[in-house]
Image (cartoon, rainbow, N blue to C red):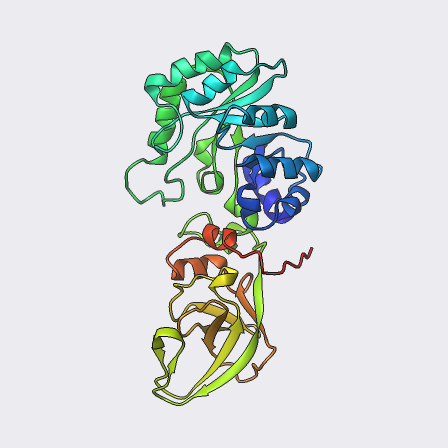
Length: 349
């Protein structure tokens, strides 16, 4: 995680760097991230409980609240913890205007440039900007946006291009002199033309790829999470015998099957198809049969040395998490965040 932050820092080229640690640092543990990202300029997260945990863990630098306040009483915590809330709706501006406090806070004004989830469009952005600038409670104001397709290859045409969103951002912001925060992981690593004064890397800090066209290895980032287990049983199947629930897979020839102590209750994707890679004793083998709650089965025909107790890597340095995610029709983000609480965590340096 420290390595990945340093690499992101090199791409940032002096810009303020928010390390995104939402969803318990993408499943890696918020307190662990506080230590790993000690050289970041700030942390960006989602909810107040995690902000409290970060402060309790010793983080004294800025914390960006990515979706801002959900209700008026949240402002008390924002002010008490010295957080920087994002403002993306008129209701949130109303909350700030009604706030009875003399303690100023920094605020990020979110503009909607085509993502169409949060933020002010051109028609109402000016009014939002003026209201915030007039408030004594607002100390510093930053303008921000979020890309819908920064991870799309430059040669892939499609709606809501990066250049279009940047142009819309400039059109809305006009000559406003406030700092700008625009680059996520993909924009930071793949779109140097994006610019801005602040960057917000997320997925790359944990060692996953920013897009399908670039592997994590090609970007230079290292996987921070390794999901491992062991073989707990072996089965020797004759041709014609089926494996697991639904008998999804049938042995076409004699097959040596290994049973791994891990399943969807641990966060491994239930819909992972046959052929999804798994590393057993350092050798990549294919998953066979349906993933069950507590077990996964793999074809050990090419690993005769494997036996009960053999070490298995479900994802990590030998099996990139993005490979497993792509096979299961999802993204590495989901696998990281879905890791179950029952999985024991062993921290290494």
